[in-house]
Length: 90
Image (cartoon, rainbow, N blue to C red; front, side, top):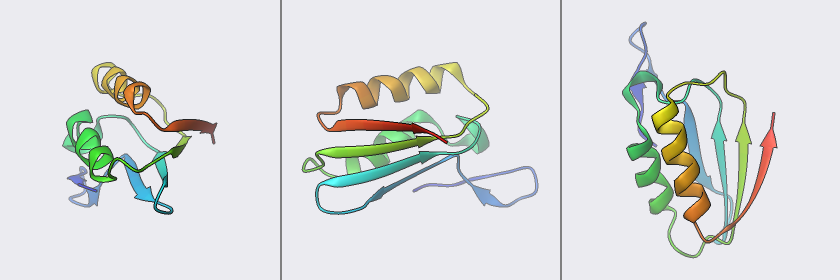
């Protein structure tokens, strides 16, 4: 996961992608999408880094919004990923 720097100089990102097992991943989007200079391009890089064996993605969202362009890009990345997706609005 890549971090950007918030206004206080702290490293921060609005998403977290981690493998829970060999074939399951968890993605959390818990802040403003596109914030701190971390773009959908970095999200795509981190999603791809999970590997091709991921069959299930659990997506947790608690976000006030953010960049429409990054949001649409993330939607398309997840839609086109072959894994089954379960979305939780936290």
